[in-house]
Image (cartoon, one colour):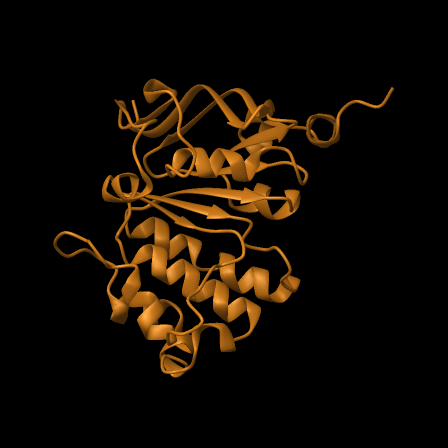
Length: 237
């Protein structure tokens, strides 16, 4: 049985009195890429915030390799090998590309596959632009920096929130071309996407969310277009 690196169990989440997640169950196994798809407002980013400790939950609602982590703060979640590429990239505008990358290694214990050199080998444009301001780059290059920064912690689990948002299709293709190398390094991936086609291309398993609930799940090859449409948008009356 493949090891379960990350799982949620009846996960709920609230913003004050507003409930954003309703009993969400997902699993990520070692070596997998799992896609979370859904329209804007489906609860995907709330799920990511819950996993990474930005929203506090009941302990057993989130587990890392079987251990309850629902009450851990974000730095402690990162220390367990769970890193996130946030929606909107969130680079430090006062820092260079290289300095933004090095921030990702802060607090890392020991070595690992991902160092500056391996990041630059995978994304050579970052070596060329390493002394430029992080936010002075194109949107696609900034996304590469955000991915590299997360990888610098040498995570077991890489969470990617809306990688393709606002980027041209050719740039999105270039970003996702890094996934095989990331998986070869030993990281398993959760990718949050509104782009259904892109998600189905890279994922071993897909979860579709709507209004804070999982409405469909399974390997891409087993899910019909009609079933995905209904789970994504809801069944028309």
